[in-house]
Length: 438
Image (cartoon, rainbow, N blue to C red):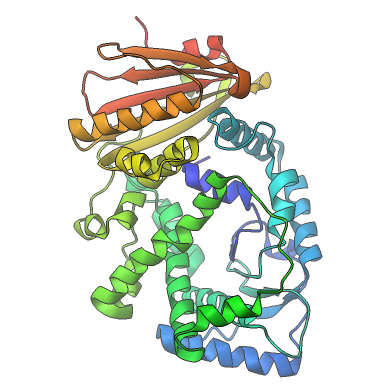
């Protein structure tokens, strides 16, 4: 199962309720939509047509449109979790255990019980591109709120994107590329980034043109009396989700300012390949990929263990990991700078799903970048309650953080000083399996 750590957080966390781009399940099991009332539909199509005009793309008139209640969306999400095949359910459980082992979510945190139900409370709309369906979550109303109007503007962007670029085929093309197979890219995640960044930027341009420069003040005033939603996911997950609606918007905005919509459209033919390309647009323009291929899987060498998932551990992932553990964004930025490549593999014991091991490897652009990462990782170790002391000159530094995390860990320093490997395991015997031979 190929996923980056951000994709693990987002795709598993929002398994079928992913903020607006639905891409799981099947067309036949998606809930039936309640059609928009005729008077409402006329207003919605004004929004649709304006969005298409601003974005410079053709209206997708064949998309099915309608309403879903929050309760229906919650029920659908619960049903999709319950319908997971045994192997898929084990992958979700391993992902939950992995993030708890690394201290990114609280011990025992589960998506189905702690996240998916509550997340439906904050989803205002979605575009389900596999079935060409655009959904507004809520009840039919004679008047649209500003929040609903902007939600629809965002989802209509996805509709015109799908009509113009064929979103499902775009994903297939790049996920099957040789660079993706070799681990130099993470196109599945970065296409999602491009699509959401594009939609968010277009939504903002729509708001400025239709509502005026003070549209954010208008939106804040409208929601001032609303009851707060009881939804408080771990900060790691919040930042993972926010990547698409923050850094990815800045990336698309940079393309737009450089070459207008033609430059944004061209990115669907040549999407960003890594998180680093999104964070540093010049590296996108230069076509800089991960500097090393993914390391070989150890699954065939492990007796009774299987690889649950793998994926690129990108520059934003490094930032998110360090800032989650330390609370220090400055050190997190420093630690992520100069990312050359990163890969994560998670393994589980076939006979005891509670036993897992996580193998993370990095390379850095320079020895100085490597040293800066180690400085940030020292703070991470201290956040686990570990005193790293002086490990200079050691090939392997080991620690335990058992009380809160049940964590056995090792930092392996390569002779090539731009590479490092970090291992986490639920028990010492599992850790020993992954350590290099003496």
